[in-house]
Length: 178
Image 1 (tube, rainbow, N blue to C red):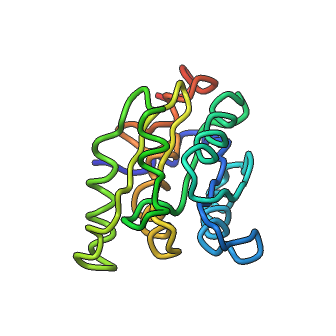
Image 2: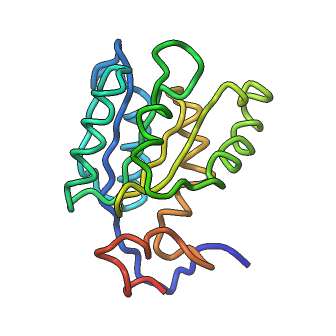
């Protein structure tokens, strides 16, 4: 049965939060703040946080800087996954991916459908691996970030989750996670 094995040691990840927005600031970024709150409450560490405009070059620049930083294990991106002209996260991130995580959008849409119904179709959420850094890109609404964290990421990023979690694929944790 899948779930957390409380007998195992929790191994925290270093997670960077990237918000895509032309209007938000650190004071008004409720989605990024929710992700920071959730990851810290879970025992992970905030490695970095930034807000960039919906511009392919700016998004790629920030993502590339973080993937080159050995102190960043995971990037959580919020915003820029819809269908407006400024929603370019998939176009910015997908070419950088070494591997795409095909199941993440499926699970995200299942979780999101419970809260927004068929409007989940308006999301182009995606995830994958750039070099050895995992990236998860979700919509910019606080509700979407809550769905993604509470129903998927909280488990998949917890080293105690069985039968397996992504924590064991982070280079500095390889061999420490069963």
